[in-house]
View 1 (tube, protein in one colour):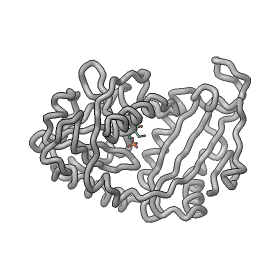
View 2 (cartoon, helix red, strand yellow):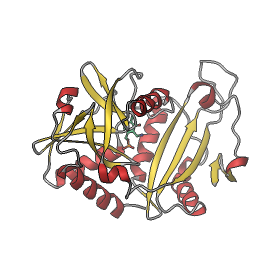
View 3 (cartoon, helix red, strand yellow):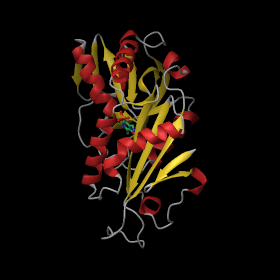
Length: 281
Ligand code: PMP
């Protein structure tokens, strides 16, 4: 695999980052994942905008090459022959002697690599996934897409140990979001999902999905919902760049609907894939 590191396209074995990099020592970094369908990038503009916001919230400088990110994404997709999968991008504050205070003159590290994997026709998309609940004990700035992913990683392990696929996080009696996705339930014809705040990541998929859903005259309610409401929902699903819209058929052991992907979730997945594919660049 060819990866991109600070201006160079390199075989992955040759791409090396300093042990003093603050991404390594302090999780002082941000990231984005852009999906690829038909060899093209989905939602590139949205991911770029969120990346700029994450950098600015952390007072992190843009790395060299920032203005060429579209070209770098495309070049990596081409060089690695990615038809379906994603491009992972990470920016850290760079290497500096270890100190909690941000270094004045560190040069940000920019890394991109690709992952080829099926996104469209997966068993999870066809059959739905199951989720458990876990306490949301993450920090309070979940709107910044940082590389501090240990707790989400623990949540996936807890889910696996419980025979489930993923976890929905719960804080003060309400579901915030999934460990790496936004969470939705459907009641009657209403699509219900938590509103935007610092409590959740502002999903790029979420924003487009809600726009397409409202254009399709579907009813949306942005509000908090409880674990009980989720257990009793008619349908449930998640959204993220790499899962698009993924039906949830079991919540904390309760079967949702008839235990197969619901009509609203299936329709939203179709709409999302069609629309984002049309706009792919
Ligand atoms: N919430 C969290 C915590 C996430 O990690 C992600 C995906 N990285 C999302 C939501 C979904 O965001 P997006 O649709 O931009 O992939």
